[in-house]
Length: 392
Image (cartoon, rainbow, N blue to C red; front, top):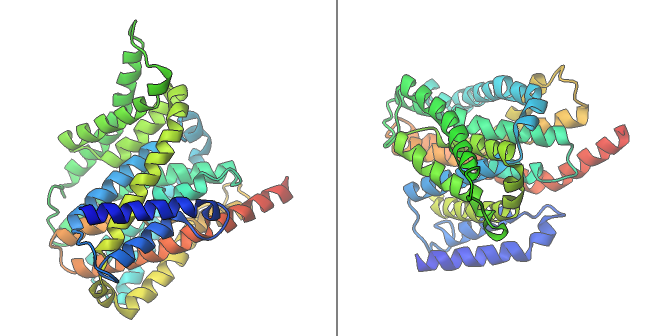
């Protein structure tokens, strides 16, 4: 644990030192944490021994935190304004991505249909952790930022039931998770309900005479809501990812001043949990994983990551009235990240047939996506800004 703490501290310091370069160039803090983890892990120095369970937990915490923070960029007014485009992404592009990945995994890699479908389900959602790199850039058109934020905020929680259901059909028994369709539906409903109810209850509490927060402690209010929500979701087996995004949106809708006060704290929390989860993920990887994926698996990742999202999103945005540049931005930026990692570990530990191959292919795809999307967010932002200026 001490060695891991030192490695994390070094990675964090290095990320801070290169942050000015990352803000205007292709080098990203994401790649820094990933690179340090790879060097410290079995791929190079083998200084730490990380378990799949630890990586799953770290990825879930990071995903929950980012979804809660990103939800605060999407109050009800924003969701209402971009729902047509975001709805197309959720209803059309996500299922199409799932189908394209599954078909590719079956015919290119040779996975059986059920295993290929599991891989398609866990690689279909757009990851909010890496999408936030583009969402947070002011030079990106508002429509693109809002659409990516709402899409990535909701499709991770919606993909989880599909992954669990398909893993169950493929013979897997994910520990601590249900594969029953009715229970999965109930978890989705509970997640949305708690995501609205918990912050709403806190807002009502603030209206009690004599109750209030001093200025310096106000940022801790939303953080307390997030911690309570995580625990409650765990106790009642609710879908915590949908709950997180809905809670963030509810806070921003009912208490915009609290959401604004929390933003600087939230951004720091976001960087910390993202870095820790990336480091844990990278230290889990070992050479045998790449052997399992094989050359065909690497080719699969190199093909699926840059191709499946545009093929799915381009028809989904047809007729949406968006400029070509914005459609291209939405089509390219569909990163795979912590949701895919967490779900892949769940599948790996489920005992499902071909679980190792699914995990290896998902991991290689995430690595390709992390490098590609985290290094291209700056040039893509600049291109979108230039296109917007020409049209204006």
